[in-house]
Image (cartoon, rainbow, N blue to C red; front, side, top):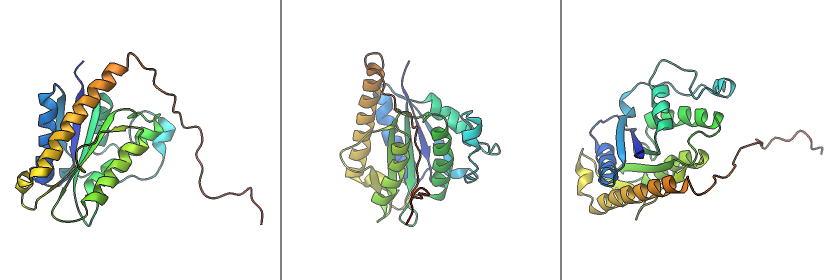
Amino acid sequence: MTPKVIAFNGSPRKDGNTAHLLRVVLAELEKNGIATEEIHVGAKQIQGCLGCMQCYVHKNKHCVLKNDPVNAWIDKMIAADGIILGSPVYCADLSGQIKTFMDRTSLVACANDWMFKRKVGAAVVAVRRAGAVHTFHSLNAYFNIAQMVVAGSSYWNMGFGRDPGEVLKDAEGMQTMRNLGLNMAWLLKSIKYAKNAILEPDTRVLTHTNMIRDDLQE
């Protein structure tokens, strides 16, 4: 079966610089035999996570909130082999839309035995001037807690531009996106090959702690 990557565009602008960056990566993946799909998260009205923890109660791989597309997107993520998250830089961090998407889908994934584990993840950031590195790290935190495998590139995955399409003039940014696509394609194919040869580790999470201890006395 052909590996598939799904990219989530967290910018409110459908054809803004975030979309242009994502499409460079997806084009490189397609050249290397990887099926792709782009979803425009930034245009949708999606509700924030309630912290109700019902996903841990039901364990049905869905969020308890049913009035937006998040559960349909989760189904697509389960079926995909790789996930790309793209965001513009707002106030030196993620867009609100992609953050809400990450909060909801991350908790559902963790509640259902880390159901995205060992899928390949990659972050893409569009920026005018500053804040890209912080945004990049915020996106990558999603992949890390989901036990995913992160694809790297020849620089941090960012492209610079203000007006829609201006990012295409960032020569190194374009190089970074193409190399990301190449590395992601290679990693996807390598994981697919290894699944029949290497036993996956048992990484169940049996212990959750916090910093509050009631068993200590002064």
